Image (tube, rainbow, N blue to C red):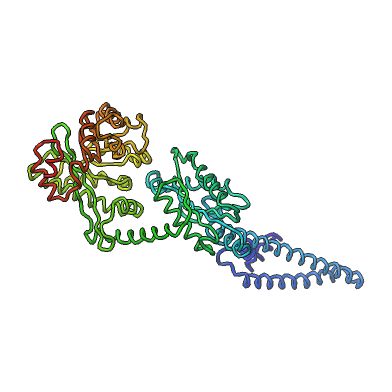
Length: 543
């Protein structure tokens, strides 16, 4: 057996190789005290063997005591030097590992992995340190939330959503400096902590810079995304003297900015706080509304201008809550969308609208159709088309008798994600209406691409029609464009005889509004259908 094999056998016998490997690699079951003791014992054992064997070897080589003493001294010094070298290497490796682990731990603790921005923990640590050390400084907190991020995730998938968050993080990182630090605190939420400011103009200027930085679209995979953010601002110490209070106030202000108009900033105030508390109460009640059967439907007739008869109706949702009373759809629909309650509520509306339409048909009015408003959240459901077709089958209503209404602004924002579904619905015979036309600033070329049957002119255009019928409105241009595209035109919000005459003059297809009838419960609408003789005047509808 040669020397290499003997050394290998020695290392294997006492598991020295495994012990050193465990020391250098630091596995999960690493026990420093135990391993240090084992290495120390091995070191004592190796040192003892070295002394015994080296002394015996020295006696064999020379009998000269002086030379033996000199060699022993050299041998001892070498042993001390070797010991010091080994200890130095072990200590250096250990300390480097500790330093590396501390850096990794700090990075994991204070850095967001997706964006490389500081995270929530880093924000709290920085903000608290500044408030403790400089309590007299004026500071500010800006809460940033991405508008419609849920739609992006639902449409493009969570991978694309993460890529967008990463790109936003890079853009925001370029806006931080010594006096302003930016953090990602979770999801699609970021905060900017302003360490010190002098005037509110500084805060407003920087807020505008933040909002303007999103004017440039983001390229994610094969998509180009136009993204806006809503910004809430809270001031220290005016709105709070600790981190949690400041964050809460900025969050509340952000929700106010988002509910008012996306892509803007809002400062916190106590009035906003009260509004948010009212919203929370409304949200809690909304969760129980379906179970308590608090929803009902009203139907507003739509009159054919040529025949003067009702040939369709729009289903309108109403919510009467025991605690809140009659709640406007303008207040609760947006909450239902944000909480995804719009899906079960929308299913309820669609089923009951079709169920009532079947009753209308069975009572001798087979030409009547119903128009139902649908949310973008509903359209994003993968099985939405199947749900609609199942509802039609269960209620016995033909697809051609159902019209789904989508607002123009929502359609423009999310067209790429829903265009195929709209085409599929239209191919099955279901009509598609573009609601609130004229408020979303869609281009004419865009209008020719979307798969719609009906154009609903928003009330803001109808209100510009003068009572004497003078041609001072853009409504006639909208009617002309719609008819050129082969669309049915409905004017909603008709309230005066002058508006009616104007719309008749320019060949609008249908009329809807309080001039003829307010939204009616089922029984009242059935009575109205029975006495509708075809005379296009308000008196008949008010009998």
